[in-house]
Amino acid sequence: MAVQTVAGSTEISLGPAAALSCRECGERFPLGPVFACEMCFGPLEIAYDLPGDDPEGLRRRIESGPGNIWRYAPLLPVPADVADKPNLNPGFTKLVRADRLARELGVTGGLYVKDDSGNPTHSFKDRVVAIAVEAARAFGFTTLSCSSTGNLAGAVGAAAARAGFRSCVFIPHDLEQGKVVMAAVYGGDLVGIEGTYDDVNRFCSELIGDPIGEGWGFVNVNLRPYYAEGSKTLAYEICEQLGWRLPDQLVIPIASGSQLTKIDKGLRELIALGLVEEKPYKIFGAQAEGCSPVSRAFKEGHDVVRPVRPDTIAKSLAIGNPADGPYVLDIARRTGGAVEDVDDGRIVEAIKLLARTEGIFAETAGGVTVGVTKKLIEQGVLDPSLTTVVLNTGDGLKTLDAVAPTTGPSAIIRPTLDSFREAGLA
Image (cartoon, rainbow, N blue to C red):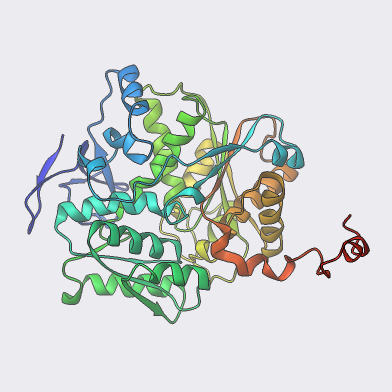
């Protein structure tokens, strides 16, 4: 168990977290609220002292744990007593076997939807925020903040309210109304900024360096190394729910790219710990055509992701300068996967397809993953004979505007049987 002393705080424990490690040069630093390497300015991530000598014992310990992400506390940067603290306790959402969708798409090897709309604020962001809250507690922060395309703002507002923090979150001014209301209802400060998400993110970076930001924990900036680890729990859950097996293929939406990179990290950790049998797996990234810098770089064979200005209905993925884009490219190429995109029309079609076949109402990001899955199968890139997991990261009730223009009553009738017959519905 790693214990570190951080300026302005008491001694802290973050479970198996041992240090911060630079993803570029490998330099290690003590645990603290920092996110960039002092040597090369590369991104920092958590390095662990993980239990590795008793896979069966660890598997039993996980299976006997709570029905949320804290069952994986031995593999996360959180204190041992995390389950006893006030938290939203997200995770262990349904892995839905999607047989009807599989038939529509021609998948024969088993198709699953990891449906994270079942989290407390109805998106996967509850996972990452739950980890960030524990880091914020450890480092003595009093305010939780973030830059957000919508879902994260709601997750931070709810988690802060539950844990007793003040919250102040920043969003682009033109987000979907459902996400705005959900972020505001928890009583924290919600600030709309004129511009794109990338403009919001730049503003938050400036705020961190100003005295006004003292005592603020920005979950996706100065707490980012801890926050990002929450996405690993998707990998853990998928494998456990498959009977401690790796899937053959995963299709994952790309915003910043962090979720995809951490799912890969989680899979590799499970292999290293002996919790799953090692075998090849492929990771596919999914973007909206109107914000597809990683897809473009993949198709053109580039290692550098050139920023774009987003223009898509998939606003939760509308990050034109994705921080983890280059690492996404590395993972897609290393695993034999790909990065693809779909236009707004196909996103809406995919939302309706998933709803019609499986009763899952996905937000636009889920429409992107299902739409890209369909496109990859049509292209012969994704193998329909293999076990495939598609991620739905949020609830369609947050993005009603995307489907409202083409979705509504089958008919409007008078309250009589004759009128019902005349409508042709009998």
